[in-house]
Length: 415
Ligand code: NAD
Image (tube, rainbow, N blue to C red):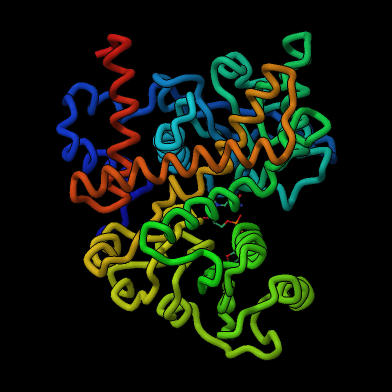
């Protein structure tokens, strides 16, 4: 069996592959293989029972050549520095591929918020900012929500930072509640970004998004929102799944009643009028679009040859392994790589920061119009390079991103 790489080693291997294709200057390559700065913090928090608990946290600032660093904060019980390093590297490439003027960063705190009261989570959120505030700011590093953090946590963090500075600094963090400077459209931003890239992929392979058949793995935040938005655009979502299994109805599923069923029973399975299928069967269904929107490593060397979709739109992070990439590419499946496909969230985070810094707020229509332009251009940049260089879309996406970062590293005279 192949060695299970740690996520940071995997991120480095992906960079190495792109660097080779780009014939990247070895010094720039060496520089881009490591984060520029890492902050390790201990956060003392007074718990409700009067005791003090010390939480460990990190902020990894991977690269700031193209602008202030950007990346979410995760509150995760199994957080590791290597996961945060990998995610910070991927943020660097994600911001570059959609051409927003940011570098990449990521933060993490080892904690289980499910076992904490709201007051304890608030004290932890403020405590984290008390430890890292010198290294963040609207011109330096702009955090955002991620796994187990949310707009309320961003509000506490923005408030804590503003108290330290002595004035309101909404642009220090994105994903805030709308009354506190959050952007309209942020809630659906990731899913809308996926839809825009799917629409263009459909044009490239000569089908119409309207009337397309769609299969969605995972019916959480991303999977449900995508089913809703795609159904509204005329697509037929024929199968969806969650950790317990999948359901199929070739006539199409009603996203709202499926959601109601899942909310009531805890799963999509046993939804009336559907055929029960396994997640493996779901991945091999004949369809126009297969959307992995659950976990990483779902389409692998072992099952990629069964994929029967024209396009794989990677809403999840890391759903397709390197081995599977080669198989899908040989089969002629059009892949929309994860860090391009799901970049709508960070793009609207950037719009939020722009609006905060200008003190001038846009309508939802303006936000989506700008998002559409960014995602569409990024898709064609990647596809154009893939055709020119004869590489798959993921390699092309890395090549686009890494060459943009490398160019400014050189221009700035760093190496
Ligand atoms: P979520 O926790 O809301 O939903 C995950 C869904 O996947 C759940 O329905 C769960 O039951 C299902 N699932 C778990 N194991 C499964 C399995 N083995 N087979 C099939 N389904 C399984 O998470 P989410 O926010 O929807 O995120 C899903 C993916 O999309 C993640 O990779 C995440 O990083 C990525 N993503 C999400 C967003 C966002 O805005 N929500 C943004 C960017 C990327």
